[in-house]
Image (cartoon, rainbow, N blue to C red):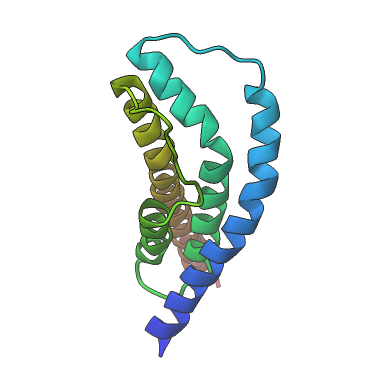
Length: 148
């Protein structure tokens, strides 16, 4: 039963993050407005990261939520479902009227992969911080019991 609960938490966090994506994409779109990117590889990577920053933030928040709420010895693994859903079914679609160049394919790949990477990083960092907090509480409880 906890596996079904954790799966539903992951799916719900993904669904919620899709709704937050609209707000975050609008906010980050304002930062990206009137920015002209060059023709280099780094420019394509930067453009892909900046155009997907709203989705990356929404995916990160979903990963943090899942990691904090899921009941499991390693709750960050349930956040990987959110990352997988962002990889398989991203909320953007690309349509080309002419065949895309290699530069556009690189931008498209980074645009699609950056939310996944941000989601996984947020889940791992949250799990590590949560583990350190638990260890600190356990040490303080042991210290207070030994003083008695």
